[in-house]
Image (cartoon, rainbow, N blue to C red; front, side, top):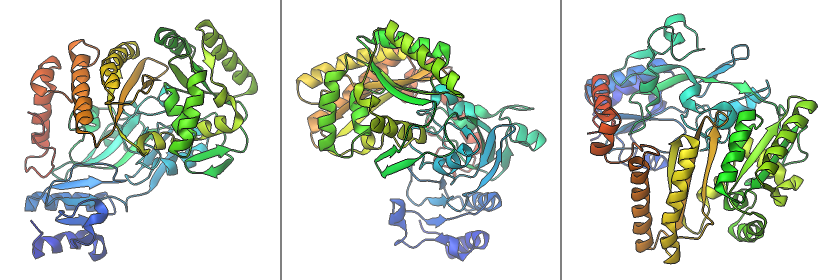
Length: 489
């Protein structure tokens, strides 16, 4: 239902005539032609006023920032936050940055690297909002954003402004949990639908020490940026192992010694994707690399704070790999290839061709939990793929699962893929069935309780979290202006 003239005028009075439109010619730019209006608020006060008007008119709204994904019901009012694109503060002493929603990770990373810092850039890439919650390549040393979001400014679905943690009690951004009660679990919303109702307008992001250069000597072009020279006291390598057990033992030892800046469990196919520019080149490189690797492996970056620190970390790395019969992939030792991976995996432009390469589609199952359990689960999920490979329904990818350590291996993520032809209905159904079966196995065998499964089974096993979430959302959104209201049953 379109906005009435009175409703349109009320929103226009808040944001200005140039920042609201219900023109159907504009809608396709937002992947949808069924919005009631697009509104571009410019600050927290305008967001609050728009949300209150949505409550007054009983109109649902959805905020977006960099716009990678979202659920967009018909007749929605879309709050496009692109005008809110400011880095508010970089606090070097207390090691945090405060950003608005449309600050992308690339912008923030460029600014903090100049000051010797980095932060948890999500695996979705540096073109996503720096406020995005998630995990990624740098988790080994920067953890994930369920840890790294500090104080947050939040406009609730009713239009109230909530300032969490230290921001609400001391007007400081350094802590998301106090002094006073914490609402971190509500704000990070780890349960389906994975979205906290309302609008985040500012957030403080934790910063970490960066041992690399203030700016990379980059050359080349996307998707194959490389470095004119490897920065001092940095190194990238890929190691393969004769068994998952030996790979896992090496990963644990590296975490215990805390020497890796990054540790990602790429398989050879993923490495080939990241160092090539087209499918034809990738097939050639993958064929060559497949002959070099002896089994599962991982990619590591080490970075020293001095020459001596770097040499020490390098020796520890080599010793642990040797003890577990690891083998360095010679392709990655090539300085050009090493430069590509160093650049892409710390600036998080890696994986672009893995995700968007032509010639097929893939489904995956992400599992987050105790790293050894997630690996054991992935081995079983990989064996369940074998009949589908024999039938020719999915590609034989050499056991394409990968994962990485979080906080030096205290936690971890494992993800397993099925690559298939999306035009093949039989293959599509087989992969979807595999996905459901293996997600359910993660729950029934107690590797991990995926909250994306059937709520009547999973909810009771997790203290009825879904029922509590419903109650919270209904309390926050009594007028039902957020699409999340009542999403779980």
